Length: 398
Ligand code: ADP
Image (cartoon, rainbow, N blue to C red; front, side):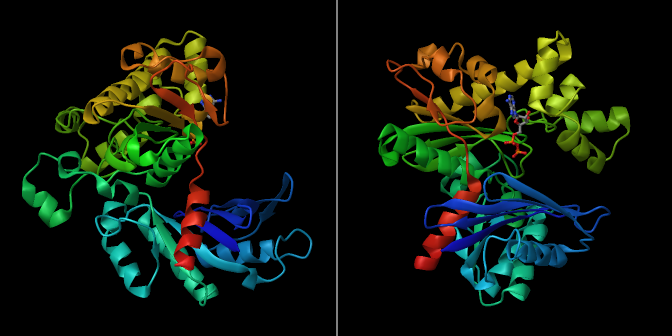
């Protein structure tokens, strides 16, 4: 069974074609600069074969058509007939309170996804566009929606409600939703498998540290709290997002710098975090490098980043009355040996003992705690696309 996984953004679209017989990836890539000059399709296939097709891509429909033509191409295609694709799985950023699991998309669902679009105005409309184009181009193929927020719908009210006037929750659905749910649920399950534990019996903290980052407390297999909020701005220090701040800073800076709300929102999302503090880059590697070379602000940025993660580990250990497993994933979690070291330093009192040799790894599944460590610590590369493909197969089979 072949499943096409689509992550449709406003001006780019990521795709992966899976052969679910062995969960191998037949082709993957990105369509860049949709509706902008110099658009192109990046395509990886076979064993490390790559191709770039430069072409005018005016809209999502022509981009997706180009993608389908490419995977069907006589020379470099990976399937012979479009009918080989059994279904399309879509990543959808926001499911609001409406969607607590993945769905086989019906027409009536589109309006429900549209309804929560004001909670993710940059993402949901682009996700919906992807679904609509496939409805046109492959009308008889089932489409599945997998929501970044769905995994966190198990959070109790004390975790998701903000202490604001209650009517904001009732009237505008203002609450914590959390994101990266597909990733957190994937690594939690995989960790239990690797440790031969029953996920429904353990307390796990999953640290998704990428450009955007979030921590999730997973108790008995369910998300009970997560660091991102109504939007992906809350929580950790991120590449260019500030994470937790005192909300009173907003009116204060507005007054001082004569900025309106929209401008401040932009600063909090795009000019803060590692970039804002270091003044160098939003990319963790660049900032770490500058810190090693003695740049003080870069050093401070890295310290802030690691310290915030450490604090959330403490908070979530308290929330779950302990922790059995900690998992690191995404670009920084999978690759930064020093970040993992510094985040976990001083947490021996929780029963965490890190094995330096084991921690000396990048981008591979690895238990990095000592055998004697009460808390098991793991590195697990995330694979959100595979979860989407698996959910798609599961929903088709049901
Ligand atoms: P996204 O959220 O865009 O999917 P990723 O999960 O790819 O992000 O993570 C990107 C982050 O991972 C960047 O900050 C990058 O610097 C960091 N990163 C990637 N490789 C390394 C590495 N070897 N050491 C430290 N950080 C790394």
